[in-house]
Amino acid sequence: MPFAIVAIILLAWYVTEPKVERKVAPIDWAGAGLLSAGLTCLLLVVLDGSKHGVSTAAGLASASLAFLVLFVLREHRAEDPILPMDLMARPVIAASLAGSCLIGAILFGIDTYVPLYIQGVQGGDARLAGRALMPLFLTWAFSVAVAAKAVVHRGLRFGCLVGSFFIAAGSIGLVLGATYPAWYRFGFYPGLVLVGLGMGPASLSLILSVQHAVQWGQRGVATGAVIFLRTIGGSLGVGLLGAALGWELAHRLAAAGGSGIDVAAALRPETHAALGPGQLELVQASLGHALRNVYLQMAGLGIGTMLCALGLPDRHATHASAAGGTGTSTPEEDEDDEFALAASEI
Image (cartoon, rainbow, N blue to C red; front, side, top):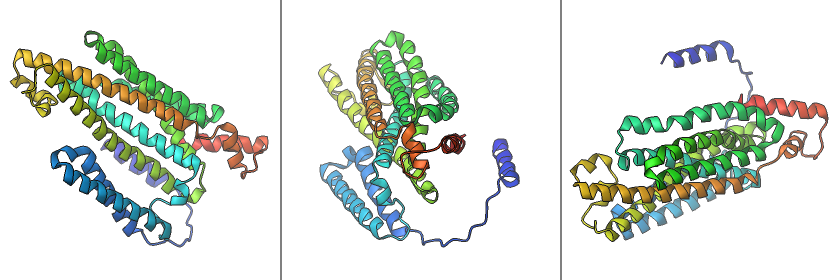
């Protein structure tokens, strides 16, 4: 709260905006409702589909598809669409949105499945699990500050490529830590540092690519789309990774003679105290192997982000866009563009 109060004072005292008379189109309530309904049904299938049975899951998936198709049709006719389809179809924006979706899946996956390893496999408490994530967020804060200046000189494509490479390499560190449980700290902590170092330039480059691909008046909806896709990607990613984790854990327990152990109980560290010593050892070993494959899948998502980065503009493309799309720019225009690129985030 003290920081929030200081922020309110600074905003009220220092931020000034020109008064511009403009026509405000009505909010696209129909589009917002269709999008919310479609994504709600989709998330119910991904996160909770196994509990409802095949027929209910199929019905929810069909409803989700129908709502999303109606949403796309609605957006083509809306006066002020929630997600303008003409913007979403541009190659640069499509690559940025796809990369943001993958980044969200990796980030939410780490937030969910690294603490599960600390508590479920290593037997640590919630405090130790939360502490394990600190290297990621501390290095992310540092890397954003560095990336804000680096992408000005090396370009958005380079920034996202380097960032996503670090993310993939850090995920491999998690794989190694889960493969060798006795030495997991030597894989987890350096791996999370690498992921944090990669999140800064990757996420920054994805947002700036979208902002510089649209006109000034469209930056709000374009930036919102990036954040929205990152959140949706995280939710869907956690659900899909969790489904793969539950399936593999069930098969490993059954193959090792632990068919009587409830998979849901095996995934909840607080229920491990009710297991016998032999059952607990079996659950921890099976859960560790299953989580290793989850981390391997997250490394694959990092490689997918690298592929999305190839669709981002490089330094020269950014300058050409700022100069009016002619492909050439003067040194003065280059300097103005670099200043705008850095200032827009810093």
